[in-house]
Length: 96
Image 1 (tube, rainbow, N blue to C red):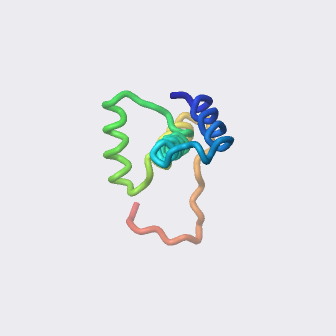
Image 2 (tube, rainbow, N blue to C red; image 1 turned 120 degrees about the vertical axis):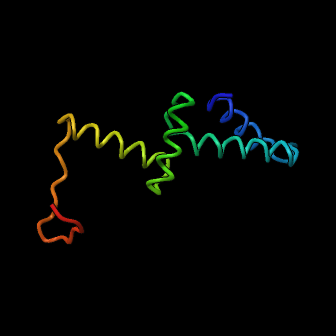
């Protein structure tokens, strides 16, 4: 079902709220919540989704934050974006 179809169903339900059964309303609301949750998402092949899920877990980031991180790193590496500069006064663990 597309977003337009769902929007039409919800508008119709709002116009006749007294006639809509509770289970039908729950289905529409859950479907809408799912679409909103995934609205800014990019779909990848299954193997990429699995790797992305694993990496997200390792980094402790959400899927979308991990995708942003990967794209930013790639763009910086390929000079599409300037590289982040380190603050001279910040504490950094490790040695060079």
